[in-house]
Image (cartoon, rainbow, N blue to C red):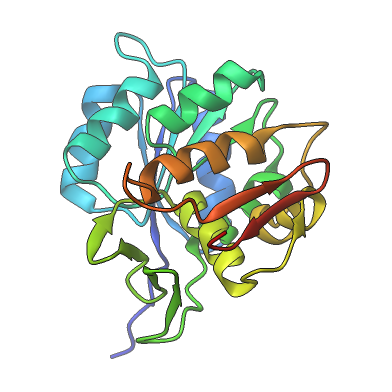
Length: 229
């Protein structure tokens, strides 16, 4: 008896019924097992029941915002990538996205091809078993997507992990903002954005204690470099 291989599970928390069905159809056509929830309470219940590989949340949810739902998931220890559907791309929106623990966001209006590119980016599993990157007391485990500095565990979102991974793959090499956008975000970035600065700031807060040296250095007018001095 043959069995049908089921793709990664994706949970979509979206109050708009038409948009939810559109997103589900796109995901299922691409091979992802997809479940829809229309509010935060149902979303929390589905996360516990199905253990999805990826969660997509509309920022505008009745009763509880998508940001609050994302924060709640992280507070309960959920480690899967979380993408937010957002209507605006202002700096305060990006900061709010990061503070809530989301890995990335997708701007409305919904575009099938661009959305699926982003989903594939977060669900690709090409890390080599037991491979680690090391620099200045910082260790990045590519298989478990965990980070440590001097044996201190560091919790990273998926995008923070990818950014740190790219920097650690090119130690002491000055990387331009354009290089970082192309290699870390991996899709056509919409418009002029200082999203890198936002992510660098949060990454520094996580990997640097007061007594620890700064490892991610700013090269004014160019970009960033991973070095100890």
